[in-house]
Image (tube, rainbow, N blue to C red; front, side, top):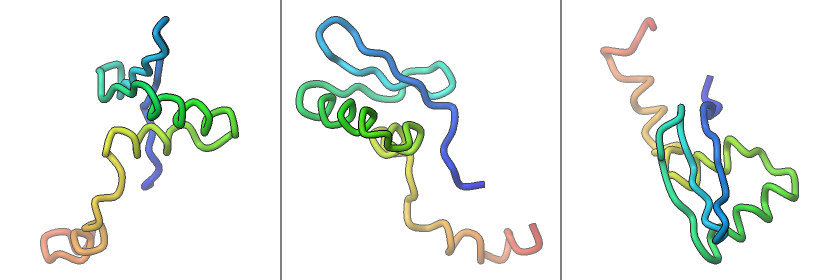
Length: 75
């Protein structure tokens, strides 16, 4: 629970990185951002986490608050 999954990426001939989530486009990285992303992958960083962060689908800060909300208690 809490770990991102379902992300994939592909690189085109111009060096643009397209990030997909469950097969659907979720984000595009070009230029310096694409280079930083690819360098992090080469270093061995967690690819799923990198792609989640790059698309903005990463910890919104309200997870604890939502977990403690009355409608979610007992789940």
